[in-house]
Image (cartoon, rainbow, N blue to C red; front, side, top):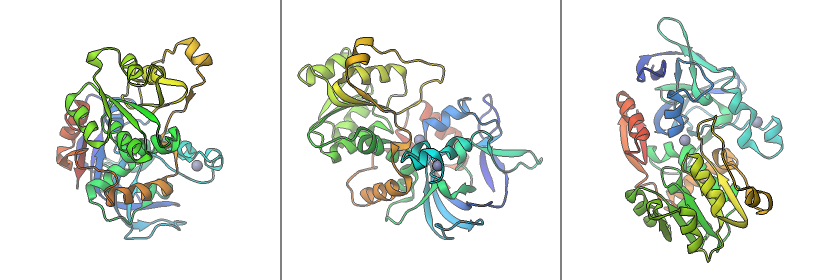
Length: 361
Ligand SMILES: [Zn+2]
Ligand SMILES: [Zn+2]
């Protein structure tokens, strides 16, 4: 089968024949239909992963189960599934503590890396983040896939495990936004635009979208933002405070991928409010917070990994919300690419030319 193979930071992805291995215990073989290209995948090809090359990236995809390995009980051949860059074994310590979004299997898929097959010269091929959806077929862990029944398009199904679960989950599960709250969202890309919609669905009265790009600000307004903040007009923290009677917001969510965005989110939450960082800066970076605000601001800081909920509970729910038009992907899925165009899809994500690009098989 063909796969998009990352062979090193100085090389583009290679479309190459890979011989997939048989599914082991708890694994299934999925024929992939589409993959949403995420900045996380782009960062992995720039070296921001624990997995050594050659590897296949792509953490959010959709497809049809074609074979199941020993011990697979909840998934059948023919099931339509979505995959997220997460796993949920229901057996490890974080899962048993009710925090499956920190399941041991997520990082267990990185160190040691999951080997899924071989190149034509016999060398092992790994997958990034335990998934590796950018291939015609993939051996996936049953713990990381969710069966979906909703009548939604292939493109919509492909974004469930990326922006949808991460954005909606950050608002519903982690921030716990309540009716009437004021919410600020720092960064309105393929994560923040889902957060805007989630805040609207949760009944937030004030939804402040902070975004440099005028096209993305306009989209945020279409999707439910009540106020738009352009950082070019002055310190976004001050602008948010002015919009909230000097107090700050009940919930501030960071979806900008920078330390500055995280620091601003913390500063614009009201005393006693909630702050939700969600994205990856460079691993060696540090965040600087005001000591007084940090020490006695009574702010709850809770970072979000894949939406902080339960994959098998949340993905079917969000799929039905897409099916029923409660949330809208129309302007978030900006462009589709073929597998042969995967490098163009990655550079479009890297250069923010698209909100979300989807590779269709
Ligand atoms: Zn677990
Ligand atoms: Zn993603």
